[in-house]
Length: 410
Image 1 (spheres, rainbow, N blue to C red):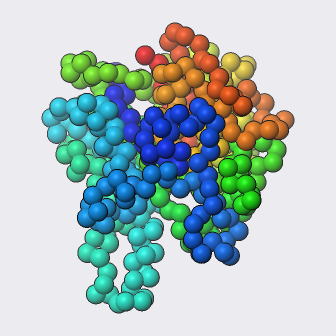
Image 2 (cartoon, rainbow, N blue to C red):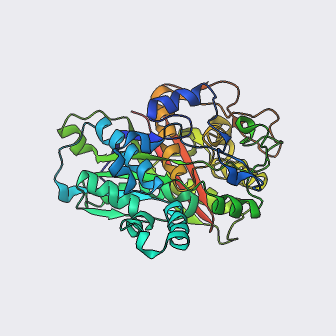
Image 3 (tube, one colour):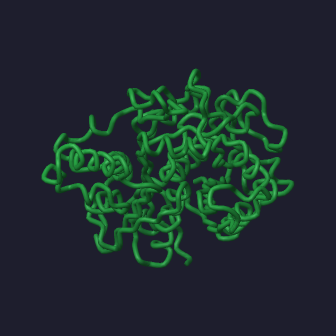
């Protein structure tokens, strides 16, 4: 697998902004997109806050088109169109074009709404689009149809590591010769009473309802859980040869990935961080890089008491003494946790940090946990060095899924 994979397009919609540049500007300004959920259904919910998309995708899409999609699919197609346009709408043989779009939970909002319709109005009122709205591969199918992909349309499902795994899978399609161009990433939109209640029952969510913007606080001693978020991020991956032949602008280089599993617990991370550390080490090995090449880590950093320390331990284990050279940030402090979309959105943040040589700050980090022995950006953006540099993006999911991606600057 010697074909180099480059990134020629990026698209997203998040709680901070409706596209890449508005989201990035918000992150550099340290502006969280977390707010109180608008709805009576939150009255009995322990957590009443979430990172709701700053721009409702239903307001961007054609009304008829939007009605046929689950909200996660709407977010995916908005991000896909931005990424595809950003890449210059590549002229590619459709049989050499793939799509890999992940979701950790899928169309749960459409499923629950359809169940309510069934109970209240009967089976004759169920939408004929219901099945395609709830199926986990729905976002990948919608995006694949949008661009006409015929090399393969795939949906990895690995909880909160799904979006990162999708990018790894898409890159492998190019490296192994299956495709020349792949649009890849992740999406999630599941802010709903049932999911909020379920995560709250696990005591995973922040209940800092009186301070929504300050609720997600990775690495801070006052953290009390993650904040649910929604949105999507997609990138256009391309073989370097194909990109050069059409004169495409390259925004970053996909260098490698490492995929492992903890074998520890269905929901809790291995406190020793061994699986996560091995994923980072394998990603660097795949990229042909060393720990000294890593100047930045976009951490999974969900703002949970156990998870943040486990990841900090893993970063220190993987990078050794070179961990002191890497500036770490936790962007979920501003977006909330986009679950299956997180790894893709944060991959774009990693690429943008390399592009602009700026690491966005970790918002709400006032009193860093002494158990987190890392150089964490806080308060203001941090500059990265010039030259050829590399960065890691970490994504971990329930089930013990560990995915680390490595990107290089151009």
